[in-house]
Length: 350
Image: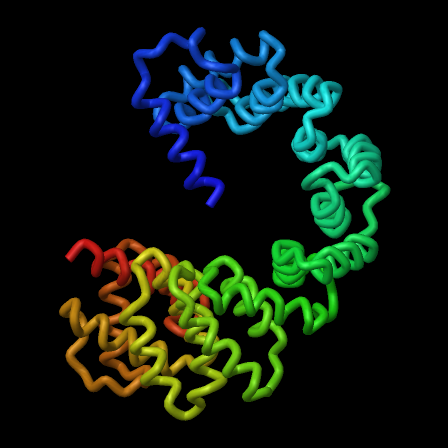
């Protein structure tokens, strides 16, 4: 909703583009400059600099953002640090979190920790969750305390912050925390996911798969999450294959073929490798079908490494210039990935 309101403001100001800047309030000039950041970043930078030099505090904070992200200027963390320090001194509420991020990027973990501790004590927005994240991620130097960060995220999530719940689940997915997340936190992420948020769905889906529990109820929860629109194919294709392993059992082959047929070309190799490690013959069957469609294979589609299959496989590898990888054998992970990537490229070209 906030983005929609801002977009409306930008449109309104664009309609009065002929109005002199001096006729606009500093806040209006600030919004105009923000609206130019994507379409005319150099102009946005120039206008924001003018406002910042005039002492408009939100613009001073935004200059730190522009330098940090290289919008209208070359990225420069030192400049970002300088501008954000000025904004902090001026009391801009969000500058404390923004400056802490820059300090972390510069490797100043101890400085970030001190800044965030004081900012959290003063209830500065965005700082408590950032402090918790940074503890878990071990980005606060010797003062990093992953256990403390975990407890903080749990407490923030319990207070109703859904993003803190997702932050915690993601850090289990990234192997930054051991064990399991509290089920209440996972359920909180799932609830947001099933309401239609694809980012939350990805986090919950990957987490539940990592549990590796032979639990039909968990499998059904995963199945519901795969139906959330907008999940990235690179995540969805692999998770659907893993779910097919757990739900389909003896009929995995058919499910795997269907998923591979729907997988986007740039993710085909990753999905193929996932299926291969689950059931090697299922991948061979898919490869036979693909090589048949490309004119290399004319034998039965049976998922077996027959002489015809090996000959077609080797001829395809030589034609695609990947023989140095394929020579180690068709049932090796690197070979599967190379062949699958080459098949996807050929299919995308035709």
